[in-house]
Length: 148
Ligand code: IDP
Ligand code: MG
Image 1 (cartoon, rainbow, N blue to C red):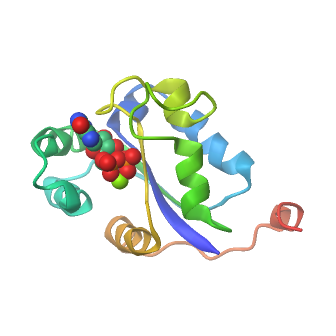
Image 2 (tube, protein in one colour):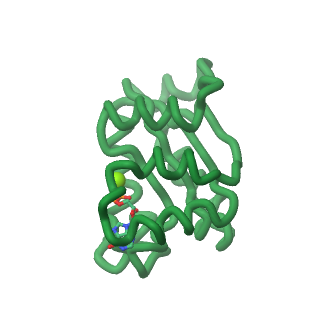
């Protein structure tokens, strides 16, 4: 079992896609263990995207991610990190297949609506960064009909 950090970015919030996005994770069978809306400051944005700090698009990315509210989520389940990345689709929405979130709703790479952790270590780092207060441990009864 894994927990992954998922975030609806400012473009997804502005476009009113929060409910649509949450629904896809929920109906897949993942368990919601953390949820909040925040307007990120520059410090947390830079820490989150630190691996991209040398890339030419980094300043624009920080400006974008701090431009308005994001919706921070933690989702738990079997192989949750790769399952979530598959629901999200590849980075460029024009190349993402229909059926994925980016494939269904996105066009430009900079406006791809959603972030998902890409590995166990990054998930742990990002969950600690965005949910310093911790996430919720709870039993969802319907999970007994998701996993055999
Ligand atoms: P990912 O979100 O699919 O994991 P990464 O390569 O980790 O993609 O890039 C992080 C984010 O940086 C992307 O989701 C996108 O918002 C932004 N980004 C990546 N490459 C570009 C680019 O070439 N131009 C503008 N923004 C980019
Ligand atoms: Mg990434």
